[in-house]
Image 1 (cartoon, rainbow, N blue to C red):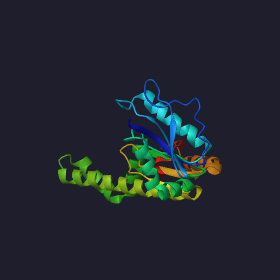
Image 2 (image 1 turned 135 degrees about the horizontal axis):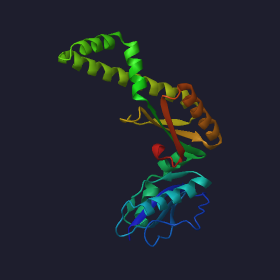
Image 3 (image 1 turned 90 degrees about the vertical axis):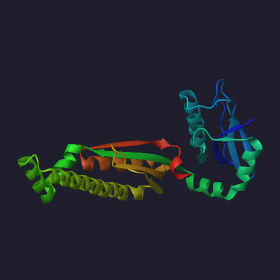
Image 4 (image 1 turned 90 degrees about the horizontal axis):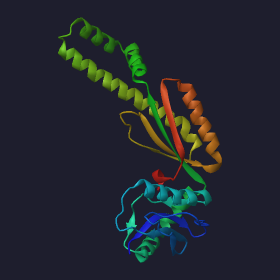
Length: 237
């Protein structure tokens, strides 16, 4: 029977999984597949695996219980192996890699930070600091038919916004990186100029959260700062 894989842990992890349900309906019973210094927390895979809310919550619940007691390499939802023996073979094949990564993650939590800025506030800054933007803006206001100038104005504003957001993102990451073990910067989106994950030592989690709060205070009301965590360290596995 196919084996559903939740996470990999070290062999000395307490694996307190009593009362924790696996995925499926009825919920699958959790078990471990062991190979030397490693365990894989697994269950039987349902015949039809879909990303239903119940199963997503069950997967997350297993990871949260494991993370509460020690380091775990979380697998993303939907990872299925052919059977237990193939899972055991994978643990053996990647023993050194998994062991090293578990040591790195031991005692650490992941936090994910997203930051956005009010568009009008950013545009006012661009117009106020760029003489060329003001010049083109004046021309287009006086002459609605100045199509070339309109195109040039739009392209210039877009470049200025992208450059400023990139610099702000680098500045935020640089300020917060000293409080983290590692960082993983994601691609900006239309709604967030910064999307970054931080791997933080458990004992420094409060200090890291305070550093994020101070960064938000420093930047003011024009910025929206969303900090999510602690999370399974997907970004560092």
